[in-house]
Length: 311
Image (cartoon, rainbow, N blue to C red; front, side, top):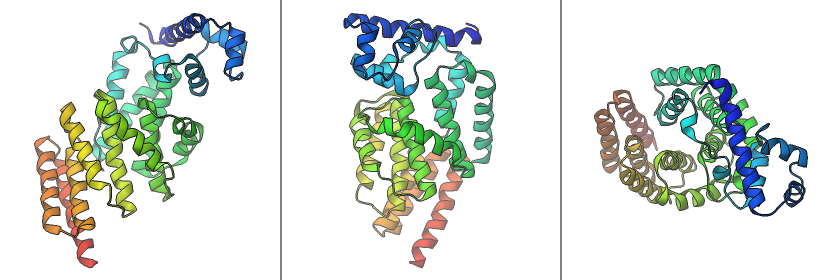
């Protein structure tokens, strides 16, 4: 399928889905718009159902809620109809473990640039949002640039806060919220709310969703470490290890071992046991072909043990 035709097909498919579900429930367009408190006009709904427009994220959420289905199910598309190259680029970005590696930071930048230049304009809004969040995340953790993150969070965070289950974009947005708050040194007011829901979803999560939730748990360990709150550390680490073993994805285990080492060093004041976890993380990273990460973990140990001895 040509890139120019991609967005039109998605508009038609999503519009047909909304129209079918609305009619199955016996509502006219006027009745349906009244039920969602006119969050969308009758004319706008007609344009959407005819495949002439895509609902915004907010509008789509209200439509899905009234139809009694999840937003992600309403907006679900046949991903085989998206350009395979785009999907490959996005997946590689999602799974890229950077950890301060300049080579990987550059690689991520090149992939994002390719998506923006080649695919972005023809993507549905949900996919555009996903790419915008990935770019904002990159800007926060590589150059501490916060403007894009602030704009995205202002637009979407409140809507995600209302949910109890999350799609992939929601998970990326929660990660952006945590990164942004850590960089700003703000109090992370929604932390407990998000963690309760994430831990409830993790046991049944598979594929990329499980990978994203595991990433969020690792990020949350950084939040707890900064707050010197070690009470939940081991339980969160245990949940992440169990999930990694279940889905047989060990890419983030070296970081998890290092986090466990930090717990034993600063939370339990046990440098001998702490060192064993740093070493496990470094050894596993090397076994996974991540020499840069392996070296960085032991560099982190040198920094942390120096801090520990000065206390």
